[in-house]
Length: 90
Image (cartoon, rainbow, N blue to C red; front, top):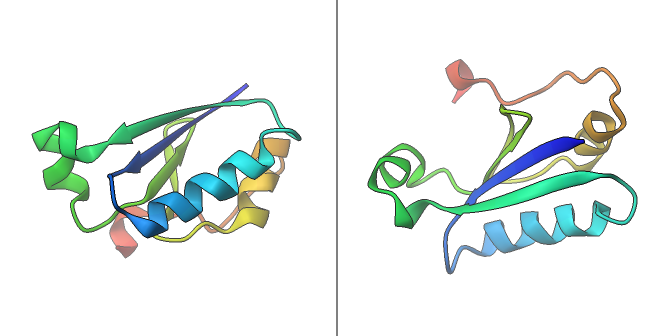
């Protein structure tokens, strides 16, 4: 089962959109989703303050700001995926 972590914050419209996209996939795929409010942790707020939402799948960052649903579906299916968000490109 895939583990998804969504870094988010209250009042973040893009965060709400990404969560809705992920929730829509729940009936089709087995995964866990952990929501982490970056404003509850000073270190996370410092790291992600202007970058939320950020989505990790099994510890790998795959989305920032907007979600490519097709890529997430491929990752949840276990298919090879290119195009993950890389730290050095940000």
